[in-house]
Length: 113
Length: 278
Image (cartoon, rainbow over all chains, first blue to last red; front, side, top):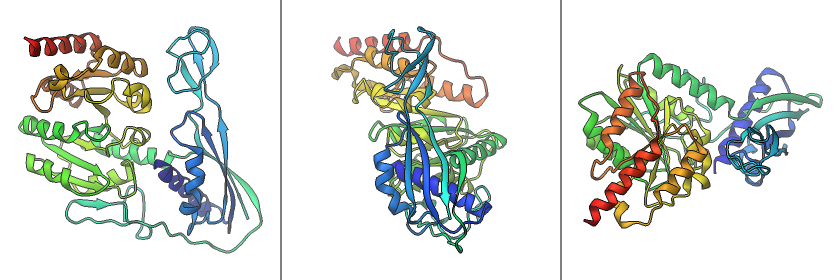
């Protein structure tokens, strides 16, 4: 369940921001999760309420933006869609596709009051 | 107070006694001040940025102390602890050795390591499934970093989560035992992509198994073509001298990449199977 540590890290980043800027309540946290990143959006949603309770993010809504997987294929010399990490190019079968998107695990923005 | 992360007393349980640090007992507690107007704040930070910063601090600290750190990762039961015990017995006369043991609970592994003759700090992760850089920074406070020493961090047995968490090690070493499936590198690619060395353990069992070594090597090099690969047995000691040479080369800053690890492991496998059949 490393989704729990990921959520704890998100709360820590929000708390960092809270120390820098004064706000009372966090209404929404928007994160960006790559389709091929090592985190399951469903598990993140499932654990969020528990991890947020008692913190600055208590009662906040978690919004997850999904980023599709993509990579640069040296065979086709262009960007191709990737459905698995280190997967082969769907066009030419080359296995040296360099992932360019889908690995994101970012805190994008928060809505506060 | 932790000098690396600046954590105070709230939300942290720091047991500094008995060589056991338990991160499973902490509860986050934070203060919520008065209300202000509603607004959106753009943050755009990597979620694991804090871990990465702490890992860099650990790396700088280890580097300054001239300590060569390896993060051992694998699924449970691959023989990481047995491999470490054997390595300690064989190498402790050459270099001082320190061990950080990560497990969900109990100090059984640290006890085995201490019995083998190396100081060990047991990190119990509680609900956590991996070690993180913060836990390791506290474990480093518990040991004396002797210049020239080797630090082995035995991560929690898990092929998924530890891949994402840098601890500040020089290299991740993934241990795959030949009693597991040869397609593990394809099923759990992140860990094999993050590792610089793969140890194929339990080589003594190869003659009795239907382990397709060539398929395993092909899978591993497809995920990570730059990874070194060694066939070893913690039980018989097979191949361990090569592992020790690899460690020594890394610790003295002259790591040489293997030319064709697949060919030599494939050859060794044939040799082991043939000699068992005659």
